[in-house]
Image (cartoon, rainbow, N blue to C red):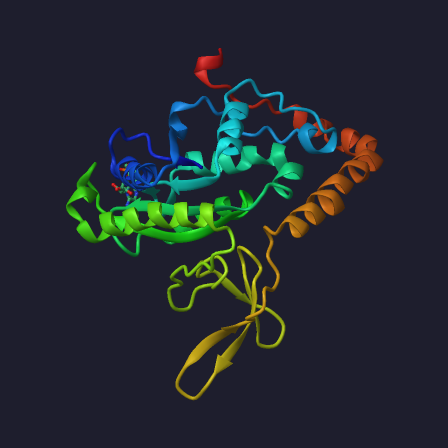
Length: 290
Ligand SMILES: Cc1cc2nc3c(=O)[nH]c(=O)nc-3n(C[C@H](O)[C@H](O)[C@H](O)COP(=O)(O)O)c2cc1C
């Protein structure tokens, strides 16, 4: 029984670190082997968009620690994701990490589902709209079945220790993760705030045809219901569309991404001649590279 904590904050003994470790201590008390990693401590380069990983099935050419991170992810039976809110969303390393998971696109669809949790931090409410949605996207990609997902609001490093409600909720996460590892079929009761997608908990929805509503993140479907006084969404109760399901992931990568390769090859020469004009304006290099 192995539980991994992934921290997206560089702040040593900051709120993310305290909360992830509190949940991990709880799992350890219940017999789990624990490990915690801090993403900013790893050398992680931004994806270059060469697509060799998907189109040619080659290992990523970037020389950094992504493979080591992937091994940590594979080691775990359960994963806790944590990040601070920076400018309304999770710290940038989270998106960088998500982008680099592209290399594992074909494996992600067949990764075994594991229990997981999201424990995010922020300074103040209403300054965090993208934090849980982005972390939920990461959880979806990693095929995590969440037992809880929340944001702890405390600005100072470690200040969250003064918040007993949050500390108690965090310990409960540790307990729930162990329960779910031991009993994979246990029903999950994750709190879903009002007017958010019941599948991924995000508030980002789009009105489609007629009164049809779709969650922009996971593509769950619902219907807008309007009465004289209220507007609400009735979500489809049976498991509907899910962008991150193994089937949908496999379809996207093999049906769409793989097909972009031959299409590009077909027009490659034409693009090469049209692109000449843009070679004449050089990109200004960073002083560090000069
Ligand atoms: C660069 C920066 C940007 C921040 N932006 C936000 C923000 O947009 N919304 C918010 O609620 N808190 C913001 N905060 C506060 C942090 O989210 C908060 O201090 C959090 O507890 C940090 O977690 P940590 O101690 O694990 O790093 C920001 C902090 C920093 C350093």
